[in-house]
Length: 379
Image 1 (cartoon, rainbow, N blue to C red):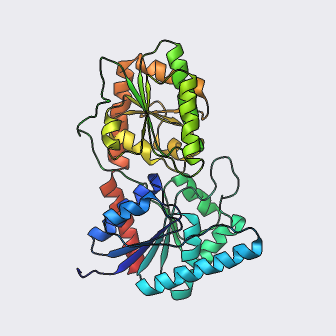
Image 2 (tube, rainbow, N blue to C red; image 1 turned 30 degrees about the vertical axis):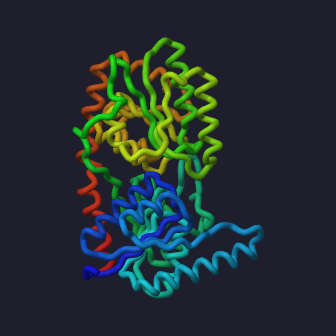
Image 3 (cartoon, one colour; image 1 turned 180 degrees about the horizontal axis):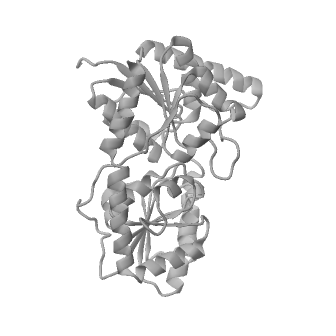
């Protein structure tokens, strides 16, 4: 086994493969490239574990779920804290990096007890859209808990940074997520054919991602006689699973869209599929960041996104993309129709989108900044 310069433990609540997990993987790979050994603690099993296996990254699953009563839930919390403690003591890490809340809570308790520094890579846990308090079960005690532990918080948006500062957190900063530049890769079979535009939506198939809004907008476009091919890329995740996917497919059948809408499921060629699109929609009802958005911008594609916290910080409306109110299929259809009728407008927005992605969301640059922060915590 190659000699390493120290061990880092990463933790995450989920074992789906979504934007947060891809960001976590990028961080893990960067840490390994620097010579650190790494391991992962997850609170559930899932497809993310298969990816970790393929990359030969050791992981431990410590299941956590709420019991039927407060007493039983307390016993569950104590059990999970003890299992986290055993795992962390065995690995003797120089740093713990938590990417979601529940795992951060357990890691933070142990880090305080054994004196290991911990970083919380916050992705929307503090003060989401339309809510005056953070969405963690610690409620108003969340920020004081962070200070008690002595954790450092690194946010993915400035809006969340300000919410932590307002909550009195002592150590907080911001570093955007990033993506690799994949512009120029080969296209897929969904590239422009016979001048029929391709419209796409990418992300886990969960209700808050707004796929119903997307499908209703497509139905309105078809009723207006607009020709298009549409793709829905992503697998079922938490929040409905296969039942939700079937609900979406039934909606497509109800509106007679089977001939122009394809469900592609989880795909490994997302970059190529994005390059094949003319317009990419992001219809989430809320969104802490929106990795799919910066991927689409890096691909030099026009993005129509919901005007909520993360996307509104990424997209400058009518400059490098378009922001619209969430859950409004009529406006989404009108925006798509307007763009498809104005090729020069599409080209202008796409050019500015790629320019913005390269300057603000380059993976190598942003990850380098994040790694520098991590190493300051270790030494």
